[in-house]
Amino acid sequence: MSTIRFTCQRCYQPLKLSQSSETLGLDTSREAAAASLPSAPGEPGKTPEEGPTSAGETDVEKRQDGASGGPIPGDGRLCWLVPSIFTLLGKLGPGRTLHSIQKSVQGTFDILSGEEDLDQPLCQDCTDNLLEHLDTQLRISEADGQSYKRGLEAGERVGEDDRETLQEELRAAELEEARLVRELEEVEKSRERAARSLAAAQAETAVLGQQESQYRRDCSALQWQQLELFDELRSVENQLHCAQTQLARLERTNALRSAFDIRNDGPVALINNFRLGCLRAVPVSWNEVNAAWGQAALLLLALSNKVGLQFRRFRLIPCGSRSHLKYLSKSSVELPLFCDQGQSGPLFSKFDHAMMAFLDCMQQFKKEAEKGEGPGLCMPCRMHVAEGLIQEPGAGGEAYSIRTYPNTQERWSKALRLVLTNLKCSLDWVSLKYCPK
Image 1 (cartoon, helix red, strand yellow):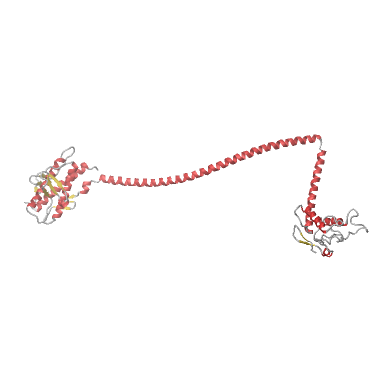
Image 2 (cartoon, helix red, strand yellow):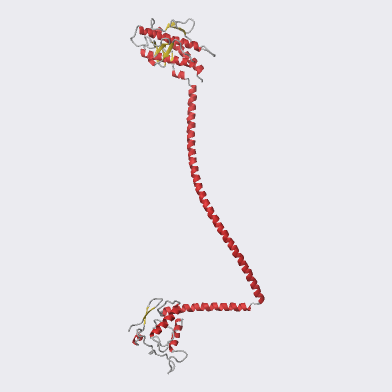
């Protein structure tokens, strides 16, 4: 014999039969009849089928009343099946087996639970909760029914005129509703159009934002380039200003006077700090004298080029301390305008001829400078090229020979001083006439 076991479908707590049911010999496998069920208390001699209701129905109804919140009556004769554990709903008739009772209980609980797939009973607490829920729904349904009934009664009491008025109001409300629906549709369409316009505007705004960012970057690059160009322009302007200032200073500067400095206020005349001459009291080396003659030849050549003079008979070749002259008719013959210490004889003769040729070139320059418009060149010392003499300023001035033999150091140095005097006057005249201030 096996024991019948149930589980609550909601709280899943095990439901067991009471011990009294086990002692009664209930067997689910054999589906024994439930004829031994005690009858409910009533009139003596009546069977469970007699009377309006059986004892089982009375007990079940009493249990349902207890689940709805009321007290549970009865003397416990039916509670031997599920005493305070679960509730069996339905009618108990004669000859019903335990299997049929279980199927009835199962169907009842399926109906109460609203679920067709339930195959287990409910415990007492879950049944009470379920019945309370059903009572609440029943009360709500009854309240709705009463409200609907009162509405119907009020509608029946409304007169014909009021009904027509209400019908007109209803038609007006329907027309207003239709108008509002159309307006709502128009508003929805407008909203959709506005949404599309907004999306297009947002897309255009994004594109314009990107273009603005690109324009800003380009503008920043151009501004940076402009600043660099301004810096370069200011730098070029500063350079131009410096160049103009230097040009103005150079224009005011006399290149010939800056390049050649002649002084004849000492015992021996100087040109660019080289002494041209020699005295017993002031001995001068031949190297310095040769360098002075080279500076004098360079100055005379620069002055002749300035006035556009081409020398006849001789050609000046300034080479520092080794300057010399050449015959134009005899290109192979050179006249050295320098002298080495210890030389004598023919070498001194060539040196004398070179100094006389230099004096001839100075005379040619004088004649060329006296030509043309404006004041001519006035050399204070008169030159006699054929004799190799140069005369002091004035009508009765003494003449000195430019040759070294026969001559003395004092007279030769005096002649060289007069030569530099004429060169200085020529330099001043060219500077005033050909070099702008």
